[in-house]
Length: 169
Image (cartoon, rainbow, N blue to C red):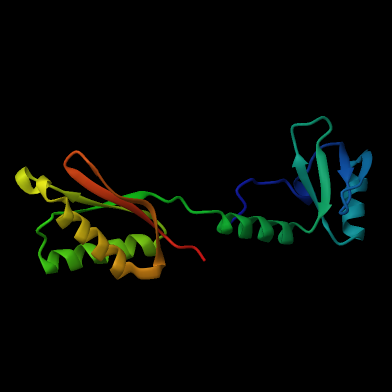
C-alpha cells in the first residue's frame, strides 16, 4: 500500500525559503531551502514538504520511509467498507438449497459484511410465520458464536427478516 498524498521531499523542493519544523515538532522559523536541506542531511533525515500551499511552504525534518510505512499501516487498519448482503429463503426450502445459501452467508460474514436473512412468504404461507422463524433460528444455531444478531427476526408485510454481523472479538 502506498501513501495516498504525495509529498515533495529533499531535492524536489525548489523554493527559495521554507518554514522549517524539526523532528520533535519544534518550529525553527523561515530559513533558506539549502540551509534546511543541509540540516536534514546532518540529522540523517529527509526534508518533507507538508504544507505546499502556505507562504512560505512548511517543511518538516522526518524519516520519510518510516512516515510512509506508518501511514500505510494506518490505512490497512481502517475498517473496510462493509455492505449489507441479503440472502433470501422460502418457508419450504429444500435441504440442499438451504446448505447452498448457508455457504453464501458464511462467505459474506468471513468477508466482514452484514447479512440480512429474509424469509419470503407467498399466498397463505403468511398465516404460518413460525415456519420462517424456525429457518431463521436454524441459521443462527448453525452460525453459533461467530455472529451477533443486530436485528432480531421480525415480520414486515410478507417478509420476515433478521440482520446478523460477524462478531469482532
